[in-house]
Length: 208
Image (cartoon, rainbow, N blue to C red; front, side, top):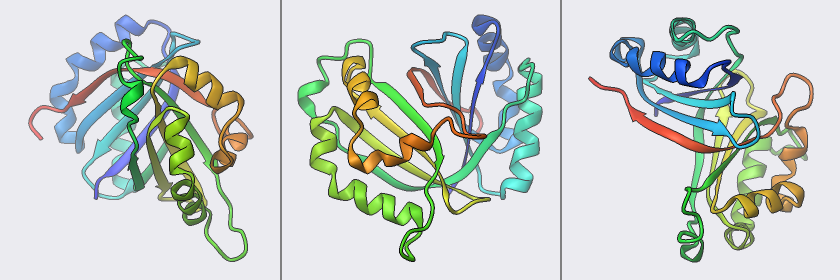
């Protein structure tokens, strides 16, 4: 199972950053990356959320190599990165909502702690609560629900939700399902606020 790195940060000039990123793709196989997915915020065009799939060599090896790539891409402030592995991928995809989203689905991303309760690890409890809420999630427009567990903190997770429309995403954020209690922790302390955006491009790194 590959390592997933994620970063939430701002770029002063998106077009310049994008040109540098795509021009630098040929060297990414040497860094161990096999895909990059880029999202752009709906509220702040300079805010970017990037996930990078890396062949598993452990975070100690992968992070320095990816940080050097950020530096070469012209990022002024190297962002903190989440490093983890997927523990759940639910494909809900309510067919009735697909045609209603001509601009593509909305992504809601959160990195937050989910602590231990009654002897049950937070990520395991979260998975159980999400499974129990599948019907409600689908009815709310959630098409995909991904959970990643951090490698350096077993009580920390990254959640990626794909929601059919912007309107449904706004409703979800205002009134999240009980299974999404973790959202209250996003933006607290060192954790970034919720990211709400759309896919810019999913890139398969050449040569991998």
